[in-house]
Length: 188
Image (cartoon, rainbow, N blue to C red; front, side, top):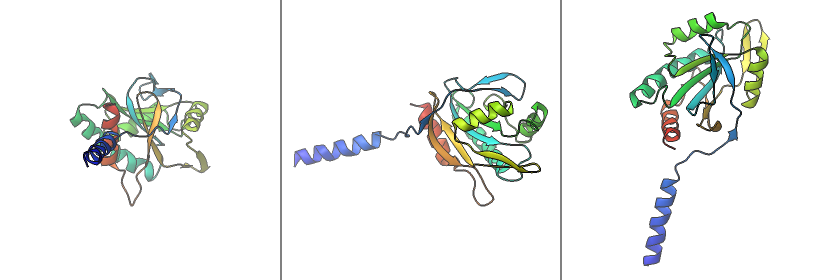
């Protein structure tokens, strides 16, 4: 009887304590230009939520950035914004999205550059980073770029620890789940 009680206590304790996120993949750090023309390196030991976007996107990208604005506020309340956690937005359209376009876009969402980084590279650099995240995109007609709608949760060691859907007309991003995951990774 005592043995079964001890086993039950161990089982509950052991599995409650294992509240960690899986390691899905390892990615190489990247260096891209921020909206001020400075070089940003992802190898900075901060937890990140990364989304790809483009400024002329008619729906998914701006809806996701509206949710990022709310995440920014929540992260500030937790005291981790910029210090431990960054929101990363990388343009898929560097030919159009120059520094001015990205700055205007970032300001429209009240992005605080302390912890919300809007980034761009050359088309070649963008493709390299996108490929590392298995992000597929293609300019299909006019200004429209078809792309995956996955966001990536990245830990301090450049490992992908979670995948989340970007927002759409029927569903916002999972802010509560993302916040829990970000704080879990900060505390690892």
